[in-house]
Image 1 (cartoon, rainbow, N blue to C red):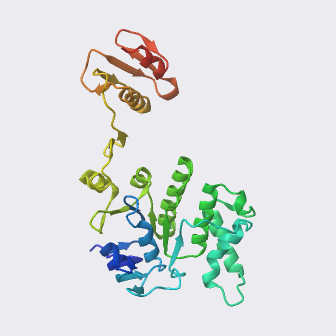
Image 2: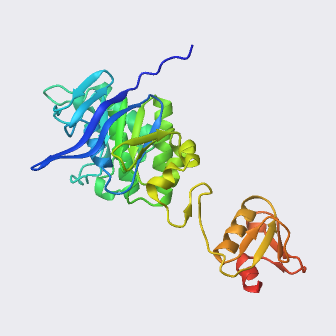
Image 3: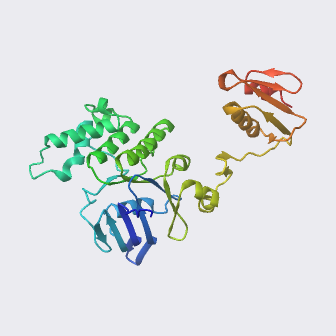
Length: 332
């Protein structure tokens, strides 16, 4: 018999939004969802849909309009707001800027231990060990003595994740943790969170715009639809079902292939043979430059020989080229 999984965080008939002078502004309603141990969940949707509001509600920073949020057995009912996140159950990484930039990295990470400290706010040996363990888990021990103003945006984001780890909660909620980072740092942060969920058996929820990375790293997607609800499923299932296309209404981007759609404005077809990355990027260059790439033999045929940096391109007439730029300059 398959074992029943109990979520570390569960939403039961949850309605999220704001109370205004003219009534309630509902962003999401009647949500019944859960976050499981060992899973990375990415929460996605169009701009302004209410992702940050839901994250704050799950963290206990904002009052639910209706329904309940249960954190590892602790209940946060509608109409009740905690004095901040439930600090020994859920840690939160928001987009708020750190203002105490003279603080060093170890000091900031140690803030994760504050929910466990007594009235004298003194770190025990065990607390200090857990701070060092969090630094090591995120591979930033070498930055421990650096002041925050010395860090790049990517390094600072790693520090904030280490602080959440030091807090030792079963659930971690993050709001746009890769915002303003370059591609290399975005990939590093997403891979790190995926590894931490599995290794430490935590439930991690990320609100993110990183569609391409989310599809390759998330165990589960929460997708904000247009009817104040969330569509959930494995990334691959949601792509194949066409749900992403309905929600985002992509303009010139084919999610199933992961490629931008190009117009074959030259009106010329070309067939290409070869292997590996070189073949993929050859097709990309041809389509971007207005050719229609087809699988059937055509009057214009290119063979991709070799791989990557040792590649040559041979036309059916025997002409050989050592770069795609040279090949394209020759084509009619």
